[in-house]
Length: 154
Image (cartoon, rainbow, N blue to C red; front, side, top):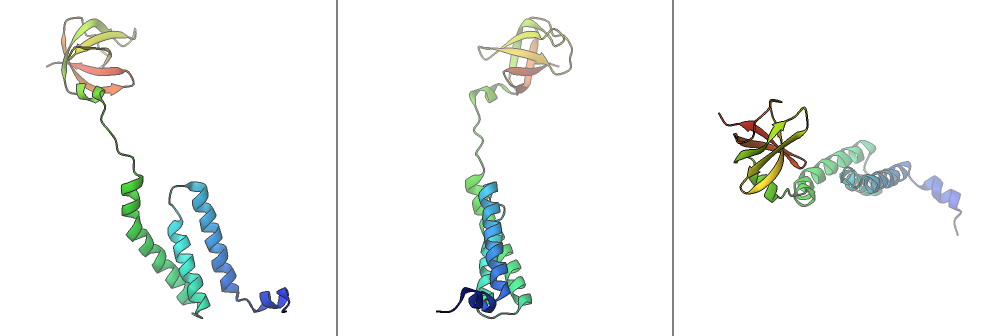
C-alpha cells in the first residue's frame, strides 16, 4: 500500500488549490446565505475538472472565470425572481392620494392632529410643518408608521 506522503507528493498542486477554492467559496456561501459566491464554487469545480484532465494553469483559470460568469448570468435572474420578496400593498396604502378632513388641529410641534379619510381616523402630521386647523380639507401624501403625512388642498 502506497505511503500517504508519496500520494501527496504526486498529487498536483492545482488539485489542492481548486479543492481549497471550492471549500472557501462554499463556506462563504453558507455564511452569507445571499447567493454571492455559489457561482465561484461552480467555476472552481470546472477548474478542478480541467486540472484533472491535464489542462495548463492558464486554461484552468480561464475556464474558472468563464464558467463562473456564465453561471452568474444564467442563474442570477432566476434567483432574483424567487428570492426577492414581493411587496404586497396593505389596506393602509389605499389612503395615499385620498382627500380627508382634519378632525383635530394638526400641529407637528405639539405632536397632535387627526384626520378622517374614507371613514377611518388617522393620526396626522403636516408635510410642511405648518398648522392645519380642524375642518380643513387635506390630501394624504404618504404614511410613516401609524401616521399619515398630509398637505392642504390647493
